[in-house]
Length: 429
Image (cartoon, rainbow, N blue to C red; front, side, top):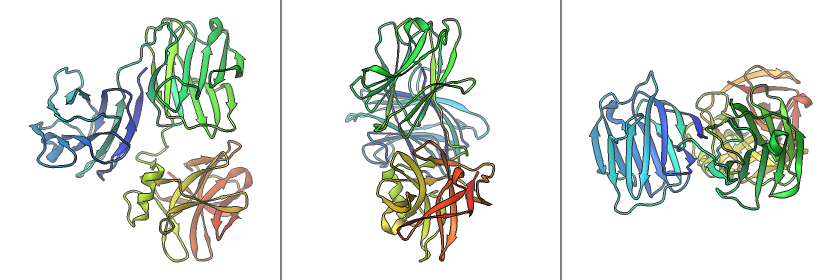
């Protein structure tokens, strides 16, 4: 199974980081120049850090840099190595202090360097700049091959869904965990078990199973079957990847954070593939993590979407935060150092939040339950209903909040209260 990430980067030299499961990453990138790759211990730009700049200096040369200091440890001429009109494939590897990068299909690197004082790498970051934007297809490591011995192989997750192409006669097992290892904190999905007659959801390796449904012949030894596993706010769904039909589901009232997936089989499988789904609907948009989100306190934080302004004139950024099993859109007030979300008739301050970065700023007037095309479902109620990003003019402010279609209003948090308005604007692509 190969773990594929589709990523868009802006012309801002701001890395987007993803966890890694082994000592290599392969990718395709479409950029006119300056495709930058960072290798780090954590999901942020900090030392220690390796950087590989491919196609820098107007697509003329490539370098390796350590700890953001000059001179570069190695430099090589690579004229025309990137293209702004077509994808070019590359790989990056690190092993025993040897950092190397090569072209897709070539075993010999075009640039490499041995670090006498290496550090362990757990994350990869990508970015573009110096006049270039980029579109990336990133593959974390080699395809998974699973043997007939019921041992999970693990990889990282960065979104709330997995799309699986599986070929085998029975027993496609997938787990979701908070560590890259088998432990007593796992969700397990047994698809086509019991000689390909039924499927089940298991919690923390305990029986009875939380869900069990008959699924005779759901798998096939001769052809790939597409499956989709989704999780949001403790609700877990397994779908038919072709039709979208729900195969089984279960809700955990007290969910734990999922950071890794594992795959295994109880039968020989020749090959299979897996990729992350759940990309946000417009290119370049992403939600920053809570720690990075706090950077938007600074005026002009790169790419953070300004949704309105406070009564004082201070900008309000589009944000969201978890609350009572829901993910709720709201507002970030930079000077307060926290986000505010509306729920249950009250305004709730959140020190942990995410900020919308890289999206458009198209606001469409509407009313009631009329949601315009292109509206972005940025959250989910505790009952699983999509929540959209809205904003309302109120008492000298333009305040962002949540739109709940079934209620026919936009809710904002204001002066300690949750206020609902039937006339509002919705953020759209």
